[in-house]
Image (cartoon, rainbow, N blue to C red; front, side, top):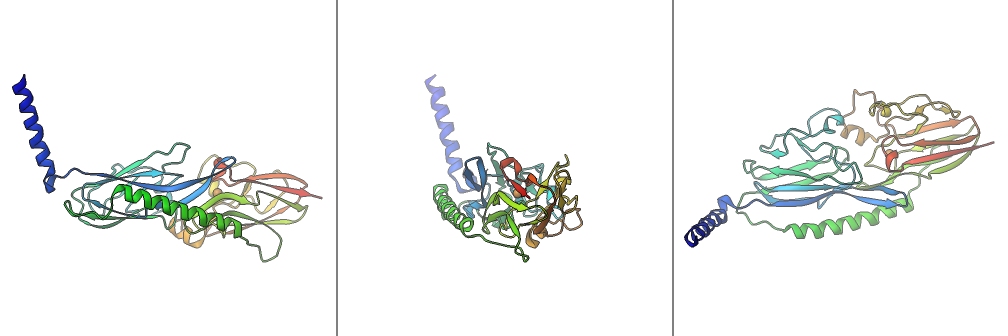
Length: 318
Ligand SMILES: [Cu+2]
């Protein structure tokens, strides 16, 4: 018995020795947070649309576990075509060459975040790579892949500290943006902002969520203060198909019974980022003006963000 134990220990030691040699060093899993969440009284209300931290240095063979806060994709080598092609996962979660397409699909789109681990294979040449979120313009992670044995500049704990500092800075900038945002239509009429954000963050709300106008007047909905999120302004019933919900329909007059929608509202930069040219979605639409012809309280939603509370109401009085 004793001899068998000794043999086992001896075998274990030789395995340890093998792994200690640079060529066979153990791989490591690094941690990056995708976005952050803000909350108001009703639940999640938006947050960050950046990776935290924005850059990491790792070894060939290492992995990065992305923890999503909010809906994001983890995408290596986005193929050409409308953004919808990124909504589902690719067959593999390992990048073996600089041109591999690796994609998580949409993750984090529920109360419970689901992490996604992307592996940078030992065969991937050392170099600097980008991982993007297909849903949020500017959301990009720089991954410096170094040869096994190279000294890495930071630890996973260092990156967690950077993450926390950047999230705190983004939260402060977002609060300031909401406090200071103003916008108005050229005609000076009633205005609602669809989202308020910075280049890195967003509040998924209508500002104000409740507005009062006289019958016959118009309300202008502006998506000009929220650079990283698209929205819709939708009155009445939505079509069941999620893409059809993003197509403009029904005109711009509302008497309480029609199904009308702005369709997908996005800036020029977002429209290009989503590669939507040639689809039935509106081209870079940032303004939608509706005339109200009947007294009543008329609720509306953003078809993309209604589930987390992006809803409003227009009170029309005599
Ligand atoms: Cu929205």
